[in-house]
Length: 339
Image 1 (cartoon, helix red, strand yellow):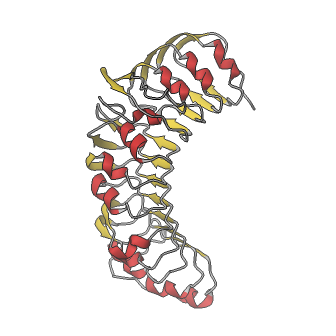
Image 2 (cartoon, rainbow, N blue to C red):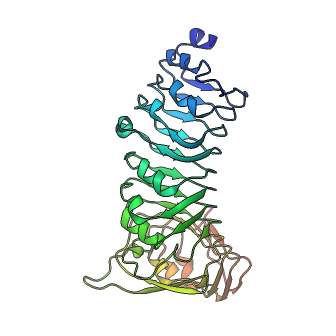
Image 3 (tube, rainbow, N blue to C red):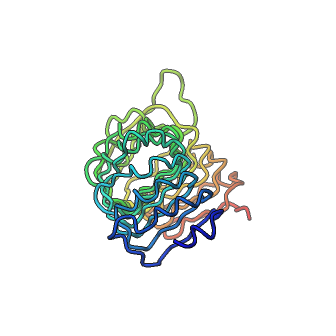
C-alpha cells in the first residue's frame, strides 16, 4: 500500500465501503504496521473474513478498530490482536459471529472499554466467558442479536466495571431473574436497555430473587429488614427482595409487553436520570413515590393502560425535561418541564 510509505505519521484511516476482498489471506494489510502512529482504523463494509486478524497485529498504537459489516463468521480466534494492548474500542457489528476465542495472550487486553457486537448470532454464555478477562470493559452492546444458549448469573460476575449493557431487540433465554443477575454481578451498571426484546417469563423478575432490588432503588432498608415486592409480567406474578443499588442512572424496559401495576418501589431509584416503560400493557395509576425521583430528566410512560390522575406530587420534579404519558387514560396537570 503506497499510503503506508507516504503517510507514515497517519493517525486515522477510513477505508469504509471500498469492496476490499478478504478471500486472500492478509490482502496486503500487514503493511499497515508501518503506520506506527495509527490510532483509528475503519474497515467497515468490505469483504474481510476471519483471516483479517492476522494482518492487524502490528498496529500496536491502535485505539479504535471497526470491522462492522464484513464477512466474519463462526467462532473467531482474535489471537492476531494480541499486540494491540492500547485498543480501547472494538466494533464488529453486522457479522455472523458466533463466539470470540480469546487466547491467553489477550488476558492483558485490559484497556478495552467498548465492545460492540450488534446483529450477530452469539452463543451468549460462551462469549461472556471468553471476554471475562477484559476487565476494563464499560460498554457491551449485543443489540439485535439472536443469543444462543441460556444466560446464567455467573456469566456476568467478572464485569465489575461494566456501565452500559445494551441487549435491545435480542432473543435470549434467561434461566433466572435478569434483575438478579444485574444486581448481584454488575455494581457499576448505569444503563440497561432491553427495549423490543423477546424475553422469556423469568427474564425481568423471578421467584425468590434475593438481589433484584439492587436494580430498583437507592435507599437503604432498615437493618435486618427486607421488603417483598411483587411485579407482574405476561400474566405471571413474581416476587423479589434484597439490597438496593445506588448508581443506576437509566432503565429502558419499553416494548416488552409488561403487565400489572407499576411497582411503587421504582420510586426509590433516587439517582435515576431516565426511565422508559412505554409501549407495554401496564395498568393502575402512576405511583406517588415517583416524586422521590429528584434527579429524573426523562420519564416515558406512554402507550400503556394507566388511568386516574397524574399525581400532584410530581410537581416537585424540577429536573424533568421530558414527561410523556400519551395514549393512557390519565387526567390532571403534567409537571413543569425544564428547558
